Each structure stands twice: as C-alpha cells, then as structure tokens.
Length: 187
Image (tube, rainbow, N blue to C red):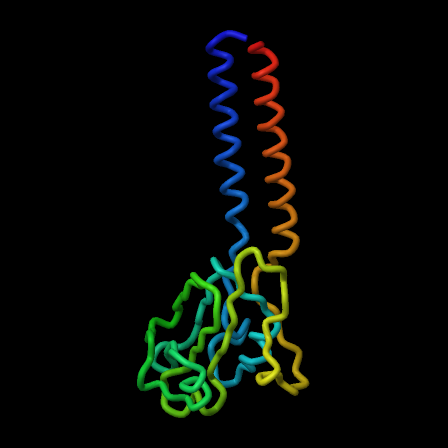
C-alpha cells in the first residue's frame, strides 16, 4: 500500500474515533421539570421526580411564567423540608432556566414565591453517575400516594443509548479492522 493510501486510511481511523466519541457522549437527557405542566404549584413534583432517573450530564429545564414563579436551589435537606429559601445556593427567574447536573448527589429546588414551596412547589432529585444503571430515583421518605399517573417527559434514553452503544461498537470494530489491515499490508 502506497504512502498516500496509508495516510488516507489513518485519517479515516482518526475520523471514526472522533465520531465514536461524539456518539458515546450523546446519552445526556434534558428533563423538563414537571413535564407538560412545567414548574407550577399544580404539578405533583414528587411523583414527577420519582418517575425519572437523573444522571451526571443531564439537565433540568424549569419552564414557568416569569413574575409568577422562580427557582431557588437550596443547600440542604433541612432547608428543603422547612421551605427555608432565605439561604439559597442559586436563584433563577428567567422562566426557562436550565440546571446542569455535573456531579452525583442530592439537590433541592423550590419556588421562591412566598407560600409556593409550602404548597408543594419543591423538588428533590438524586443524581447518579453517568454509568449507573437506570434505577428508580425515589427515597422512601418522599413516596407519594397520589393516584395520578405521572407523565414521563424526559427524552427517552434507553433505546437511544442502546443504539449509540451499538454504533460505538461497530465503529470500534471497524477501526480495529482497518488497523489490522494496515499492519498486515505493511508487513
């Protein structure tokens, strides 16, 4: 194999590896908080949270009416339980606020409008590692006995993840095959 053909194959392998990295990173989900009802007092946020799995790399999108609601991130479970929004970690009021889940652990959010948190407009989520298996995201102290069925609104990642894993496997096998071919021709 000539030097030009060998160089073209090396470029193709590099391109395939770059594409496979892009495919692997595509598992993040944007969760619209509260589903179709959004961030609102009428939304059963506990049920919504328990029907979703949150992983590092995902995003929470808070959609609400500006001036009517806001989003306050609370620093502790105590602040969450007592609706103590005075010492917030972060405060947002844009009506379409996005929070990136960058590390594992529990995070707490509440509406900053007086009285809304006490009416149930608060959210507790547990963020799992990106490699964690899909597990239900509830804790026994926050289970809900509501008879309403939560509306799943997160982008479905199970079939997309399977397809992306398959694509990554195919691209990896193809790049290995090309590399073996190069080594065989070179000898």
